[in-house]
Length: 166
Image 1 (tube, rainbow, N blue to C red):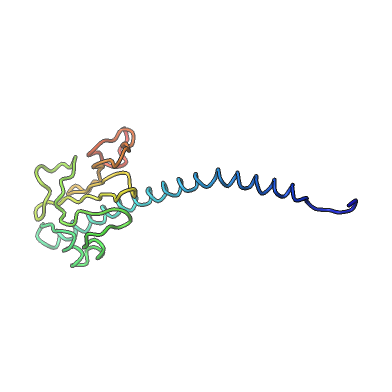
Image 2: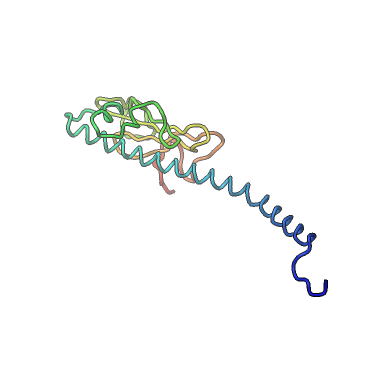
């Protein structure tokens, strides 16, 4: 055994144990980070989808005598992707298909219903987003609600435009 090189079984078992302890500490934080990243991606997608809906409503009204419509009609006339015409969800969010939602903080009084106005909400499915967002005639995406035990970003509240700073 004088010239033998290598590791003993005990040394290898100690190394495997250390690697196991490190993995046990790392995996929960990786899972949590992945869920938070997915939620943030869903929220960014919802904001962009609302901006797309707002642009589609304006394009529709420009060619239909300043009248607005619902998501089903916008999809049927190719102003929007066909995914918006159903009651399913897109990237964790469900949208107000009838475009008849009242958006908090919007400068228009009364109900925001087609044909003279519109209002669309993006509502997260359970665990897939933290905030409900809304858009209406003024084309500003606003916070509408907070899901679960979450809170609004500092300086924001229901009806505040996203990205608002104090």
